[in-house]
Length: 329
Image: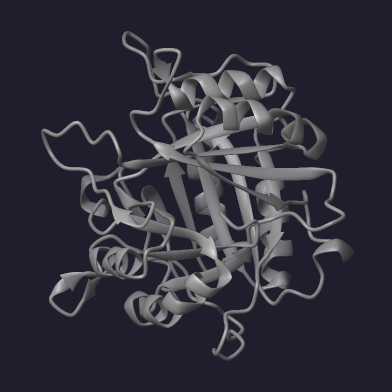
C-alpha cells in the first residue's frame, strides 16, 4: 500500500438507524463498495455523547445502544470518497480524519496501529498475543488488542457471525511507545504477520505548541479494568468525571489482551476474579475542552495508565466544527 495513509473514524450508537438499516451496517457497505483497504468496527462498553446520556454494559437498563466506533484506513483519495457518506450516515454522531503516517521529523512518542485478522497465527499462537510479547521485548511502553465485529480486509467485507469461525474478521492492536523502539519492532511485525496493515501516528502527552493549529484533538486514556480508583475501575471513574466536567462525549472500548510497562502481557483467564483486560477511553473535542479533559483524567492516571493527545485533520468540503462538536451517543 501507499505510505500516504489516512484514517477515518466514525463514532455513533450501535443501534442508530440510517433509513431502514442500522447505520453501522450501511457504513460498512460504503467501505466495501469503495474497496477501502482495511476497516474495523469496535463495540464500546460505555460512553456518552453531546446529550450526555450515559450508555454502559455495567447496567442492563443502560446497555441498549452502546457506542460503536468504525475505523477505515486507505490512501487519501479513497478515504475522501467516503467522507460525505460517512457524515450523512453518522448524523449526530462524530466523524474525524487524521494522517496515518509519520511526518519527516516525528516526535519522541509514536502510536502504532496494526490491523490483522482474529485468527492470524504466529508460531501456532494468536498473532495479537505474539505481537504483544514482541513489542514488549523491544521496549515499547504498552499495547492493547481490540476485537472487531465487522470490517473490510483488502476491500472485502468480513463480519462476525454466530457459530462461525470468523477467521478473517479484523482486530486491531494499538501500541504506544518511543518512536525508535517502535521503528525497531516494525520489521519483526512485518515478518510475523506479512498481511497486516500498519499505521503510525505522532502522539503527545498533552496539548502544547506541537499540536497547535488543529481545531479538534483526540485524547486517549489507556488503562485496565483491573486498575481501580476508590474501589471502582479507573475508566468508569474517568467517564463519570468527564461527563461532569462538560466534555462533549467519550467512548470506552474493552480490549482482549495487552500490557503496560514491564508487566507481562495478559487478558482474561479462567478462575480469576475481575477482568484483566485493557480499557481504552477516547475523547474528541475542541482544544480548550481537551485541556480541561486532560486535567480531569490526570487525577486518575498519575499512578496507572497512559494518556496521549493527537491533533486531527479538518474534514474536506465541510464547515469548521461548532464550539461543541458532537460525539458518540
